[in-house]
Length: 423
Image 1 (cartoon, rainbow, N blue to C red):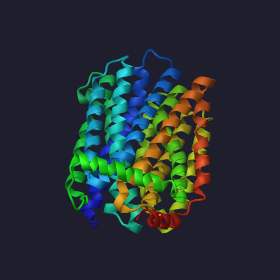
Image 2: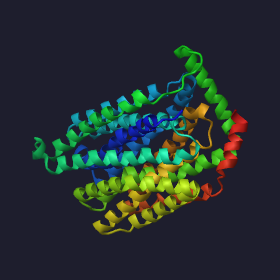
Image 3: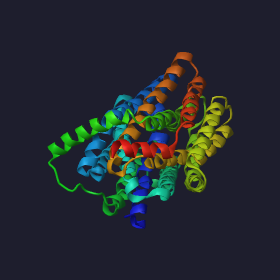
Image 4: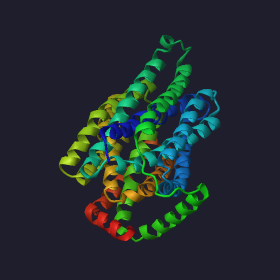
């Protein structure tokens, strides 16, 4: 039974781990990777290397997610897996502070492991959503998580930006030391604010306890059973492929926009302020987007978000002035949380709660599989054509294709189809 304590404790996990998404993935790591860790490499090569690192971490999650999801469902291990991946991410975030100038290979290796921790923890946190929210409250609760994520990530990122701009205020020698210190603050923030989820969110346990070996075998069998059936769930597969395509564009922009803006000559300080703008607009905008979807229609709200992203991508490929980057950042802030939150809640309506971790494993499987291609596509197009602008423009393909497939998705029909086939 859902309670406000469980709902807010679950949503606070987004507040906790969004610090990594904001300060590390979207903010300082791309900046630092280009200017410090890869200080001797040319602009296009460092872009390609960052794209490969992002893609590699996604590939590893792709291979792990469905199998671990099946084990979590069978054994009641969702929370255990959340904290296994959480503390991998925490340790790697802190470890980035130990990497020295020019050691881009080590930085990329640690970053890959940190991304695995971040993305893996999200799979199992997502899978708890049907347990803490029911039916009509799904959009709001999912949106609450993302909105708190924007606020929490923004608060810490604002502090980190101040540390970088005024390192002497914090007893730090220079900007480089301040960036490294910010990686440590992410680890501390993530660890501290994960505790409400651990303490107050209840996970349903299986009726009979099994050994680890039996749980793994049962999870593997359940995965094969569901995978065989899911091939025949044409409606669900259609949504998953649509999601796979459009969320690729979203995640690619999150991870590569700072690198792109630096490649076309914008100053790092301007980019940092734009990222802060995304965070603080994202907090109220995500709640508003979720409320509108709750009042009207989730699918239509997704179309609005996808269309906005397509416009953003095409404008980004043509922009010349820094003020344009700020306008684009504001637009991203208005839809980024909405498209993520509503995709999660829209999917949660279609799947059986009893197999939520496994199905969210497939959900994240496709989402992370998509982020293999986006960064690689940008890197490949940029290096092949010698143009970072063409690289970012290529992302528009994912939004167009995703919107076309989403048009044919029927949520209620899919939910009925899944229930009749799997239960």
